[in-house]
Length: 146
Image 1 (spheres, rainbow, N blue to C red):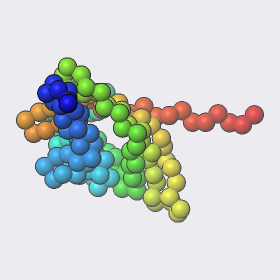
Image 2 (tube, one colour):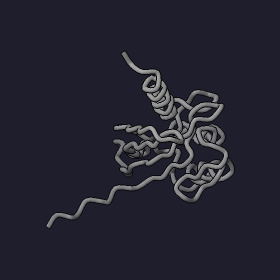
Image 3 (tube, rainbow, N blue to C red):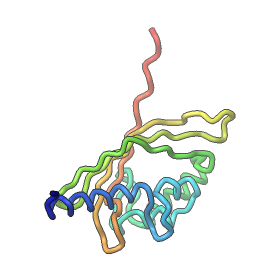
Image 4 (cartoon, rainbow, N blue to C red):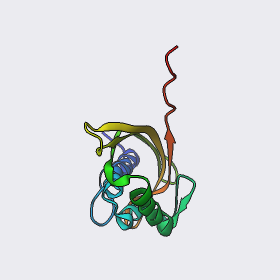
């Protein structure tokens, strides 16, 4: 039989996992809100005092990031593909990590534009699980053949 404490931890981890699958009032995940260019919905997956990539702070910063992403970084032709999610409970909520493959769907055929790893700090709020911090660490390009 599972203890009440362990069940509480498991339920919390499930909530944090669901944040990556569906978050915000409209039930869309964070990356689908990036891909659609919806800065308000993207910001809704974060806490009000959040930080993304050590640069974009709070709702205003996150909305500005999405505007920059779609307007200057070819974001409208990119799709995020996340995999290998790891969630670890902490006293404050949870830490997470997930691999990212960014596809350029403007190319024919589509090509991999970048690969990276997100590292997250997740907290439970009255609105559900939210990102407190999210950082993207790009993978190094492969070494040229010798």
